[in-house]
Length: 322
Ligand code: CP
Image 1 (spheres, rainbow, N blue to C red):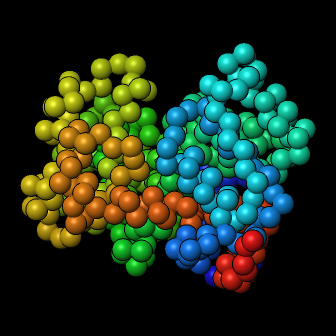
Image 2: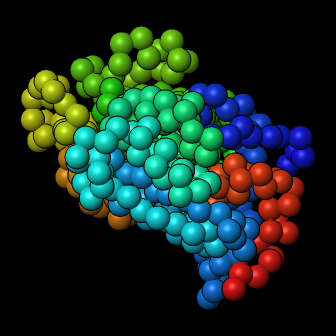
Image 3: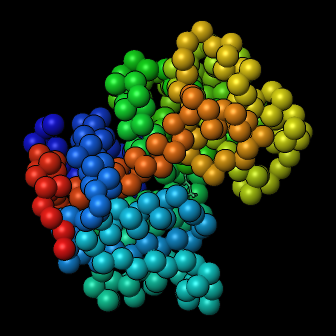
């Protein structure tokens, strides 16, 4: 781990990070994994820091995972959802954040439905801003936990063939994975109906497979995405049944693969649509390990943005929380 790698105030996406910064976050997550396995899951790394989790869109995994990460690092946390706040009375994002800052917060973790919202906020408030998913733009901590999980099971990212399957068009997870994986030297492909593959995606350096059988033959790892029906304004697919028939990941399809394939899914899953239950719960799946790794990755991000030194992460985990 390099002692010279530094981080800025915010984490709004992986597009802006270097390969060294991404590797450092993954390396710092390693010692933090063990804290969640202890009977007393707490170290005093962020004692005295106040973190607001500001969620304008629904979330289970990301919101709870950030909250666990913050609490396990001994930060004080407050959760705000748009529906239970003055946002419903018309308060805008910056006013909400400035009012929170008037109460002397240190960090904001934000999920928002608009692409670019995290950077917009980061440019306007002095607190650290961490993007927990903004519109169709980026979901950096999801991609980081995906990469940590691939590394756990396949030793390294460089040279691995990762195919992202499904609704690429609406996916912030796909975008963050593409940036992160390419920076770490993976080969990246996408596969899905033509209507759900963004025009010109090849320019990012990814291959496009039209047929799932070709993708399965090529890939070491499939990252299977949910069809984001709530973001689809037009009829992108004829029916869910047809989507499952042509692109659904089934055991029968995986059994025809020339080598062992790792199956990731960021959740929430539509079982029987993009992934069959036998795959989701079967031997290829590391979906719940992704969720476990999410806490460690988010602890690493919080630690580094708060000014923690990468080379001191191992020491930090040995400190005892109260
Ligand atoms: N993967 C993910 O972002 O899940 P949530 O929407 O539940 O946070």
